[in-house]
Length: 159
Image (tube, rainbow, N blue to C red; front, side):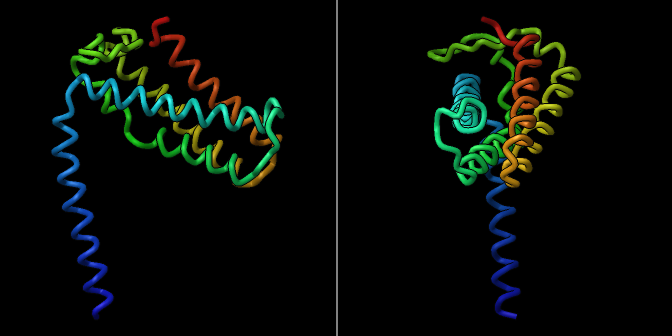
């Protein structure tokens, strides 16, 4: 019974924290939204580079654990709900934050949602393939993630 009470207390705490986080999230300024999304994309890019160096270029010794870790980070960010960081007022530079998002993104949410879904699927597949250690499968999945990124960049990213 004590373990059940502890589990229920933990669950209740998680629900309360999630509710509080949702309230705070709604109050994120446009400037911070741009800053946070840029940070997320930069961190994904760094992790893509780690995989590329080991599996594609071979410039760094292959380490299955590092590749799996990098792929898991990419999948976690892809599944994090970063779309919420494209709120009103973030289609242009705000304060010190410069954005490269094409304002047309904000007029094409159904298309963006499809592109995002494709990216999430590709990122999830990369994580699954990285867990196997099969470098040929990782290379293929890595290419799919790159294509998913490019599909959105080609339409909705300014130079």
